[in-house]
Amino acid sequence: MYTDPIADYLTRIRNAVRANHRVVEIPASNLKKEITKILFEQGYVLSYKFDDSTVQGTIKIALKYNKETKEPVIKKIQRINPFQGLF
Image 1 (spheres, rainbow, N blue to C red):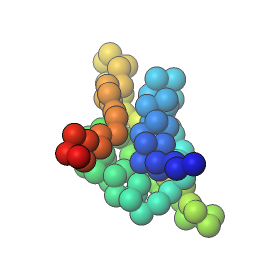
Image 2 (image 1 turned 45 degrees about the vertical axis):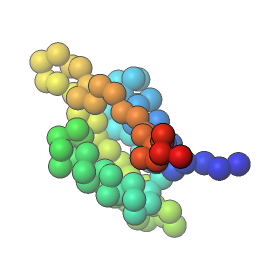
Image 3 (image 1 turned 60 degrees about the vertical axis):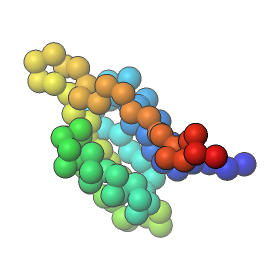
């Protein structure tokens, strides 16, 4: 069975936003760390922390919500296959 680590990463964020969680913890990888940095730089997450104290490590992401409306900044997040429709 094949698992898609990026789809899992996005699903964890999506589920945390839907549950109005403030923080989501995700198993780390170098690619996931880079995606997290981009989400932070683009203003979609409040902050993040890489915890490398275990073998795989974890990423703790503080989700961002609008101060006035309390609505999540991330409205929709999904994995898009860049090769879809090419073959």
